[in-house]
Length: 85
Image 1 (tube, one colour):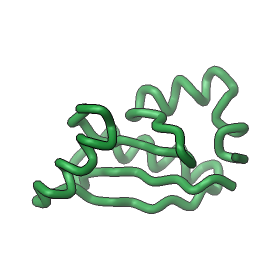
Image 2 (cartoon, one colour):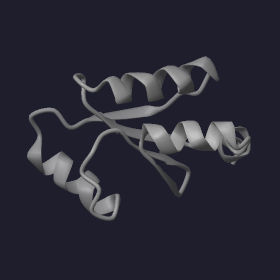
Image 3 (cartoon, rainbow, N blue to C red):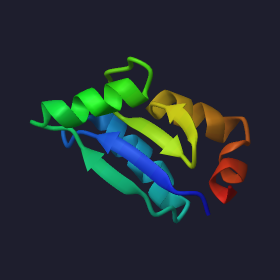
Image 4 (cartoon, helix red, strand yellow):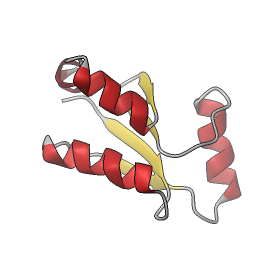
């Protein structure tokens, strides 16, 4: 299974939804919280090509994007293959 990294905030309902989807698939992920950590948020923004919203999700080397993109990948039937690596 591919490594999954999610930059998140404890206060974002979109982060909660994304983590729920991943958990429902039994995916273990590494969560990096950006709350009160401007340097971590800046790193996320740089890695995400300027995107500042949370969550920002990577599966393996693929930047999926945010919650909406994660769910779109699921609806398109591509998430399981991406997670499998």
